[in-house]
Structures are given as structure tokens and as C-alpha cells.
Image (cartoon, rainbow over all chains, first blue to last red; front, side, top):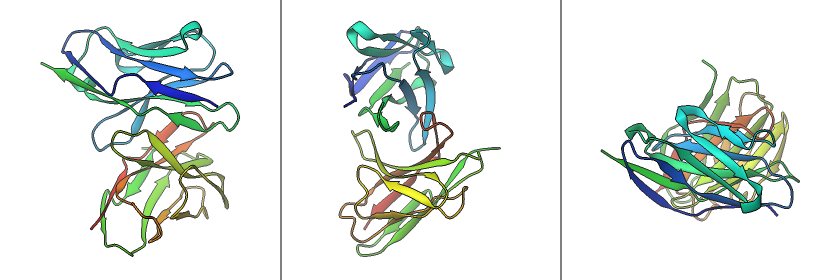
Amino acid sequence: AQSVTQLDSHVSVSEGTPVLLRCNYSSSYSPSLFWYVQHPNKGLQLLLKYTSAATLVKGINGFEAEFKKSETSFHLTKPSAHMSDAAEYFCVVSDINTDKLIFGTGTRLQVFP
Amino acid sequence: DGGITQSPKYLFRKEGQNVTLSCEQNLNHDAMYWYRQDPGQGLRLIYYSQIVNDFQKGDIAEGYSVSREKKESFPLTVTSAQKNPTAFYLCASSIDQRELFFGEGSRLTVL
């Protein structure tokens, strides 16, 4: 069965410094992977998705993620954090059998001035 | 503007009462979903519907009920059988069951 693990529940960075949010997945097949962002008391918004095309995926707001099959990872990065990036981020894998999405437990990103 | 509208945004319920959360979409999506979100946990699927007049239980359907009489609407009823209903509820729709479009959520508190 597919699963996804977000390695950090909280990440704090200073504005202008790089962001790294870590995600590992477990899947017997080549999965579809997603990152969603949720601002406080809001719904989730898709940041980017990997569906077996290019392994480096670019998303909105300057975020990108790299699919590494050998490491079963799909880490989210951004070169320079902005205050508006403070939010909760969810790594998600699509179950190959049911097409249902399996959500990680989330990483809360804090950005300090 | 196309999107998903959830109402009410905040709802308080006394124990033993049923409440219904509304979800309406004008994206012309076939599939709709209800998720529950609790602090420190990922989203958990309650019910989903891939087509009008059909729906399936998700991972935590006990104590909840839904209907899908129209393509645009997918209301969720939280019944008195749900033992711990205080949570943030999110409705979503999709065209291919992978990329989800979410509403802004409804926060239910049981008094």
C-alpha cells in the first residue's frame, strides 16, 4: 500500500533563506505525487504535481520539487522564503489501485523577518 | 468566478444534534469529496462521489451521511452517532480524481 511521510512537523526559516520541506513515500509502483499548501483556516491549494514526466517539477510561487526514485523522496524547495510562504504544507501520494489521495500529516512552515 | 463554496464557515452544535454542511461547486466537476482535518493529522476521507446519485464511503464514514442529487451539490450531514465531531471539514472536487480543488472549509464545534 502507498504511504507518505513528512519528516518534519515544523520548519522555521528567516525571510530570504532557502526552504526545504522533506517528504518520503512508499509505493510499489511509480506514483503520482503532489504538494498542497494550506493557509490558516483556508482550503488547500495545489502547489505542484509529479506524474512520471520530468523529475524536477516547478510549481507556483517559486516552489519546486524533485522526484528521486532511488531515495523514494519528493522534497519541496524554494530558494528564498517570503513571509507569505508561512503556511502548512502537505505531501500527497495517489493510490495506484483506487486513485484516492493519501495525505501526509503536514509540515508547518514559519518564516521570521 | 469558478470555485467551491462551503457554508457555514463556523458552526456550533449541541451534543445529540445533527448538522448539515453545504458544499456547492460551479466547476462542472464530476467527482466531489469530503475530508476531515484534525490538528497534527493529514486529511482523512469521509465520503466521495464520482457521479450524480452515487457515492462511496471513505476511510472514516461512520457517523456521517451524504447525498448527491445534483452535480453541483454534495452536502454532508454530521449525525449524533459521530462521537467526536469537532473538526475542520473540507469539501473538494476534481476532474481526474488527482488534482483536487478545495473549498475554504467549515469549522464545526460541539458544545
